[in-house]
Image (cartoon, rainbow, N blue to C red; front, top):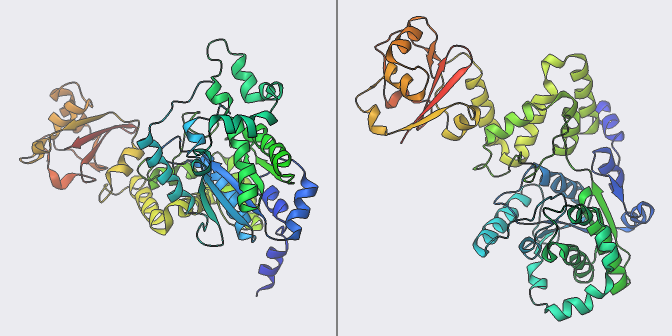
Length: 437
């Protein structure tokens, strides 16, 4: 092994807590000294919950997934919890309004997506890890059993004091329903159950879950006399203070049908300079020494953007594989190059030009050739054939990035940049999409 490689490896932390902290996954721990000793004693089973409130997990969820993945890489056992029960209730944490309750079909679809996405970064088969659904142990409970065995251990005074509850109680417009108020009891019960059934000693979650996790630590001690721990990571925010997630309305989805590999790649490629190193630590497996080198290069030569390119490649590879990276890089080269657009897919074009005006036209319009001037008027690039003719004559019109100077030009099916889409550009910045179906 090369000396440089040995030196690089020696700079990497080895204790699980130090690894997580060095990569940005630790905001708080219930008892760090105790948790350190627990890790020192051998393999630790730990869990993180993911409620099926959407048909895809997103980058905000990926923070927890990567924390779990790192612990598994260090020899510990993940228990990924798909919240079939808690998802029917809705967590008030980080919410100003009541979540919409989902029907059974939506829950089943969303749970299936969670299982798929979790498997991208963790081995949840056999002895290495496990996927569980809290509906399996929550559904058989009767209301009287739950109130007697779980509810009696909770003080309403403490529950009201939780930030997520207090904020909603102070809102005259929204308030909080008893349904969401009871969420922390269900999550606490999950921890106690997994301690008894799976020997689970650690629960992880975002910092907004701190109150729920502490409640689970306390309930496990009361019910089973168990010493368990909680660890939370910071809620993901960009350098300009934007939060990630469904509630914030800016979710970057893991499902390629909701966020295409190209759009996913571009998200990381366009990350703020101040976020690049942080995101490399959170969303890649690159050694910290390599990330530090990329950070220094970015500081000395921001225009090169090597850190951003590495982030885009490795973050995309994590979720969409080598094929996703190859396709995203190829599409980027086409869309930002000087050659005509060709061989792209509809999702990539939609993501690349999501702000562009678009029009849907019958595919039959292409059969005999559609006049360029007519098309420009229909997509809104010109108000009249006369204006369209003038723009073409001035050399300011491009079809799929190819300049067109003939006002009599027609387009057909062979001229599409993707199976259904043609891109018009007028001037330097004004794009229009024509979709043919």
